[in-house]
Image 1 (tube, rainbow, N blue to C red):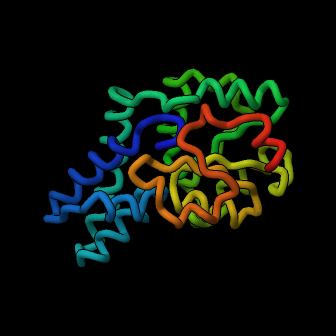
Image 2 (cartoon, rainbow, N blue to C red; image 1 turned 30 degrees about the vertical axis):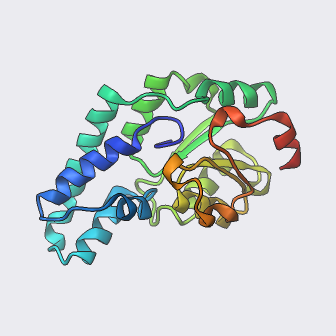
Length: 209
């Protein structure tokens, strides 16, 4: 969802960076992108561990980041190119469409309403309360179960490396749409297809997948 359907990654980065600065931590863009796709508690745990910050601050910090991100996205988040196109495409192809995200369910529901895509979705799953988030595949496997389809018949669209790994671990096809500044990186080679936008996806590509 984040970075794929809605241009929220810069807003998550703003929320997370603001919190980390309170603890004297400033991340480079490369550092930030290396942990994209993780749930907020795991994201904070990683950086708090790296910079030896007392973990007693983590729970409150996680709530603050998520609340700030929700407010930023509600106010400033815009749909990514091709969202309506890809939803209509798979609707016409009679696919069941699910949304599986690391974000909290309250934020997912807000984005679904904001983008007005609820009518396309047959299921929504969040990794918020799962034992493990991405790159663990559980959130995708749960979504497939909710849609009543086999994982091997699913196509996942992802923008993050951790999401791509989760999709492949679930034995699903994966189409990645990385951020432009990351597009050239060889780490996306594990995906089945790499595009610059959702709007580039075609029926020929579907048939090849």
